[in-house]
Length: 305
Image (tube, rainbow, N blue to C red; front, side, top):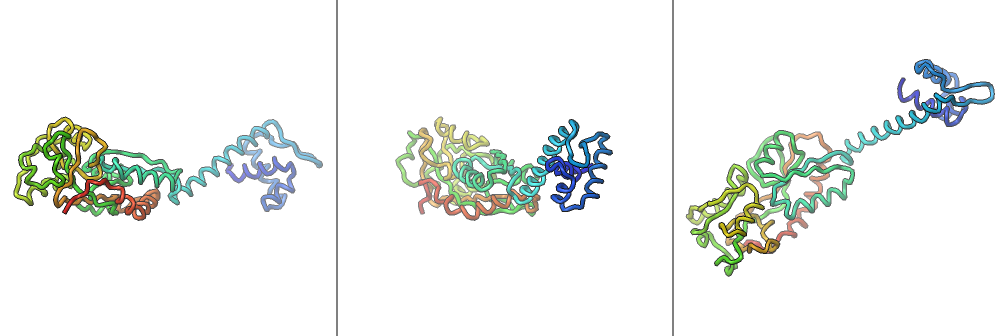
């Protein structure tokens, strides 16, 4: 038995006439009648009562009609869903992102994507850049917002924005009165930064900023997450160079300050070079179309040249 036989029976049950049911299905009556007879034989039950004047459903036929309609509806849903998934209209998108992106970039991107593809379930994973790289290469993520780093042939990237480093200090710190901070102003400061094993691109930008001035940075605490770094600065345990995308006035205990010749940090969308998930393509389109507005949303603590 297959779905065609169910459709034949539903047509008969809805018309209660072999000729009209056959015509609805663009068939002649004899082969249609044979299909109904074959169906009853396979089921081992009588579905319809026949005589020369009319057709009626048996109790078994009434039940089979209800179940057939439900099965056919599920089958149609399955066919529709398969087409929608193939078209990138339905399915699941596993999106990873670093904490810096969570502050401004990811909410905008997810909002745009959800509006464009409301039937795609977005699974969000906030983690470190190193973990993002690992999960992308391992096939655990479909896409991720992260820093541009070492190239991998298995991955391709789409530019999102160019971020910059800025300084955050405790509100009572002496550097609060300075508009622009240079590397030599931080030579004696305890620094708080994520280790290179967690955020290699960010750590290289921070160390490079001091190295260009001939200064050896003094790292005191090395937590993994930027949120922890901000809280440690708020607790007056040091200062930190962080991406400008999280460097604003929203945390009252710390004050952002622009850096002279602030290093640039390229933020990208990273996706597998070969992926069978059609939900990725709309995300790439959004990034390409919205990178201007995303960049315009950066905070006021921009680098001063």
